[in-house]
Length: 492
Image 1 (cartoon, rainbow, N blue to C red):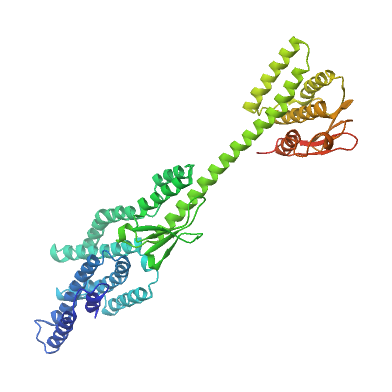
Image 2 (image 1 turned 90 degrees about the vertical axis):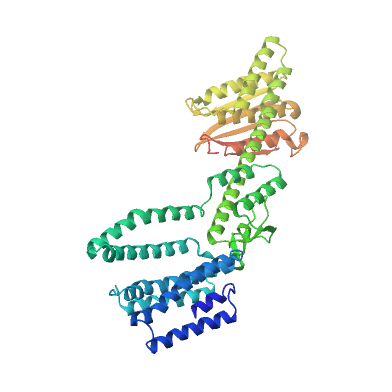
């Protein structure tokens, strides 16, 4: 029956006459045994079994070659063919061969027949097609263990019956030979197979290069080329979106999830149609997709950071450099103009470098800022009212000092240019770990001279929020700016 099955499935390699001949020869062997026409009882009973095992082994090899371009059939053969060989070889080599050689079998027939149940389990699983295409490394492991056991038994038999060594020393020598020679070879081959299941480090570099490709069309072409080089499918088509890599049609197809910038794809027939896609292939694709998503997210984060830095520099140029240039225009002293220009260049270097130093004394920072603001207001005969309730030794970092300078400079610039005010007032105090700033004037009010989307006002609010604080503006009897800034610099 097993020979007839292998003659018909997965590829039909024998016609009806061949199958009829198999059954005829099998029945003839049974009749010859019953009529005692065989040379001996052991040959009559076990000879046909050994011959059938050899034929089955040959048919499995022939079917494996015949189905090399039918991956689904090859996977089915790999499963139940392995089950047949495993189930029959144990009985043949532990019962039939020793009996034919006139040696006492090493196990009972009842135990050996129990192993034959593996055949039926394998065929049942093959029929149900449960994970039929996921045989992979397990086929190699089971086959290698089977070959190792057969090699151990064969060496033990040669040492006992061929060289006439006692059983215990013979078994020890056979075990040592298998452990020293066969197992290292098996481990080497196993590592080569297992290596295919992980992500090649070179693929990691390719994924990063693809993620950094700015052109979307070129990025999709490179991603398609990566999948083609990794799995060599017969074709790659666009597919409906899916969130995870998965196998379709018994492993004949594999769905690849979409990423940012690359659509979902369907790969047909791995390795030029010679193999099915395995679950390990789906796992590899999922790793590549997750790596691609991570690389794209990292690239987007880097670009976002670059945009934020450009925005920061634009705000600083508008607030600080603009205020300093306006201060220079109102100065009539050439030497003072030179000094202001020198300070402006220093501010410009700070903007570019975005110094993050610590240890600045807040009172010194405010003293310089008060002097600068008073000078700007005095040029247009405007009064400065400055009130501080702070610790003289309070230390701050360069980021807070830069934010505070920008807000006060921009507020002073707006008052000078638009408010037509008589005074400009700044009041500061420290409470609950925050610096509270109230800037006001008695001018026309913000709604009367600037729009709600004025660049300077937006910059002041954005700068305060970027430092982890808040800023509000009102126009009740002039302009009022309320800012709240943490003394401790928040994490970026």
